[in-house]
Image 1 (cartoon, helix red, strand yellow):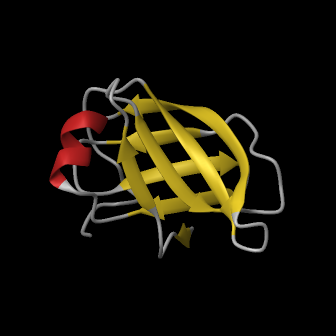
Image 2 (cartoon, rainbow, N blue to C red):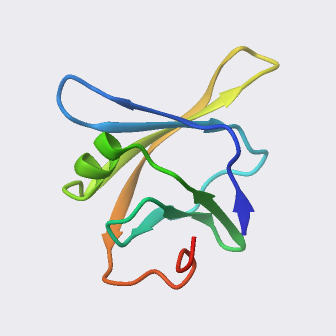
Length: 102
């Protein structure tokens, strides 16, 4: 599992969460988020590519607990622009074994 060291979250006027993360070379395939209501979320970008988003802000937690879908913007530093954007479904679970103990 990869740890996303530098990410940002924006809440739009419509209440949609937008996660801004570093761009990756591969395309996402059936991405989804596993979320148990705590301070951490597990982002499955594609098979064998899992990313930990930890220490979520309390306001983000409030929105994520009630979200079925978020948006991800991948930022390309070289281009100084968004390289791709896509919707990601949130799978709400009772216990996330990947974030236990964090």
